[in-house]
Length: 249
Ligand SMILES: NC(=O)c1ccc[n+]([C@@H]2O[C@H](COP(=O)([O-])OP(=O)(O)OC[C@H]3O[C@@H](n4cnc5c(N)ncnc54)[C@H](O)[C@@H]3O)[C@@H](O)[C@H]2O)c1
Image (cartoon, rainbow, N blue to C red):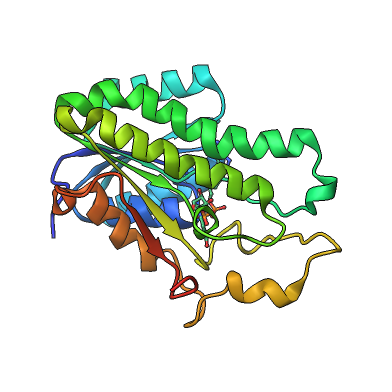
């Protein structure tokens, strides 16, 4: 499949996990991928992997929660490649807290990166997506659909991403822009390898997180993300697609 032949796709969180998998998949389908992440080493790895496979990619370091950096990032993408066909917003952070002890700065950081970061990229990308009739794929989560143990901050951020995406979907449908979410669950990645549980975590709640068929790698969701970003999903907007191996089935 070459669904992105010479089309420009900006992928945030491209330095690791699902964002990296999405960047690789979209590049393999002919896309010119503008890879964005805070992690310079991860970015370099992703860009090198794409180029070694014969694809086209550029890396750009950016903190998605920094308004000026996001403005500069989207401008740099359009200056470099000339247009923008799809935005794949995968940058995110995860933390678990006992709600009785959440520190305000940690709560705020989760909202800043997961929610405000996604909003800033949507805001800056939309004028360009209107020109190309393009689309947005945002990272929500199973935590946007059902309770996540010790996940008040993360769940609030992802529930809000889903609500924001639906709003964008109806606001820009007449202008030909689509906006959808994926709701991943139990995908092996940087964030799932590095979990710190609060001492009060009730591990009997783990079935709400783990998939019925075992965790999968980012390749188990990157094809779904590519589909949503592409014209295969031309009649899908404001949708959330759960990719969790049946956890919430
Ligand atoms: N892995 C899962 O099972 C799962 C489940 C639900 C939702 N998600 C969501 O999927 C998305 C991808 O996560 P992943 O699992 O691949 O995790 P990951 O940790 O492997 O990748 C996240 C990437 O985001 C980048 N990032 C973090 N903060 C940033 C910032 N301020 N600016 C720029 N980049 C930043 C990190 O450097 C990293 O490369 C996230 O939004 C996550 O919340 C993942």
